[in-house]
Every structure is written in C-alpha cells, then in structure tokens.
Length: 111
Image (cartoon, rainbow, N blue to C red; front, side, top):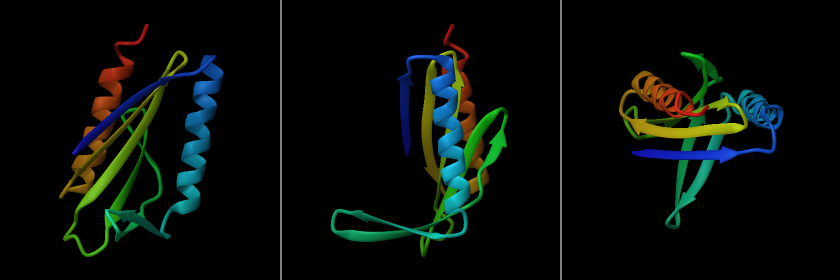
C-alpha cells in the first residue's frame, strides 16, 4: 500500500514548521497504543519513536495481531512543499526505507 501527498505552504519556514510539529507529535505518541476505526472495525497499532532515514523524518507503526504488518510515514520539505508518504508491508524497516526513498524522489523534483 502506498499513499502520497504533496502540500505547498506559504513559505519554506511554514513547511519546515509543519514537519517539525508532526515529528514532535510522533515522539509524544511513541510506545502508546493507537486505535483506528476502519469499516466499523477497530484496528490497534503501536507507534515507534520517529527516526531519520536519508534525511527524511519517518515514523513506523506496527499493527497489533497482524504478524509484523507495519506502516511507515515519511515527511520532508523542499522549498515551501512538504512531501508526505505512507508505505505499508510485512517488514517495518523496509517500509520505513521505502517511505524515505519515495519522499526523496518527490522533493528532488521540486526546484
């Protein structure tokens, strides 16, 4: 699974502030249970502390009872644009590396 979003902010400073705020929020959630409702079914996750992979802020979350299924979200800025990517799979490290790789491919194309 892959989700990509790029958002333009009014300035490079606003874009970087958004990434910094998100990373701080991720730190606050690390180790805590996260619950989401998907089609009337509750899905539980545990978030890892954020890391940096090839210059990209990344947080991975592990789905409880899913035999290692993990999603990783990567964020980075270029100018006033934030690239936001989520990848999922059975290998958390690979999902995090893939999210960072895709984010870098996006931001490398932004002047």
